[in-house]
Image 1 (tube, rainbow, N blue to C red):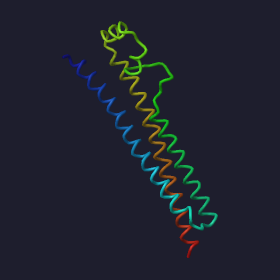
Image 2 (image 1 turned 180 degrees about the vertical axis):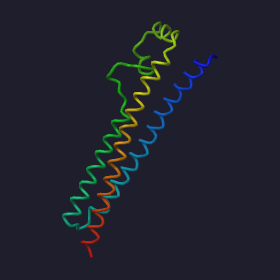
Image 3 (image 1 turned 90 degrees about the vertical axis):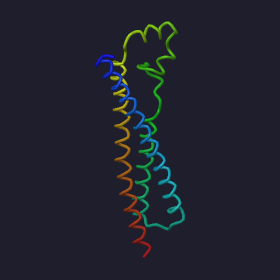
Image 4 (image 1 turned 120 degrees about the vertical axis):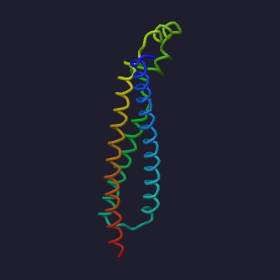
Length: 151
């Protein structure tokens, strides 16, 4: 096995692993957002809160919903565009076309395409984390206002 072959194999595996890590982080953050929204609803539904707390809390909830939307977009399969590597490309080819394609080393092109997918997923995850942090600040402000108004 040549150094180029070894390096291509390693790079291909690294990019695929990065996509898997990003998807795992996205799943955890989606679960966290769901739990946070459920907690906010449980606490706020029966509370008599000042208008300022409702506004800050509502903005926080809106940001959490927006973050969940970004995360869902990051993990949504894109089957509508041109297939670029692996699945779903195989579903568009005949058996002979698959044999022909596999006879040619396509890992370089696959690494480029998968890297672009990974970067897009990571960007969506990063923006969602930023929104969750901002929502957290707003929810803390709402809680402080609500506690201050209850005193």
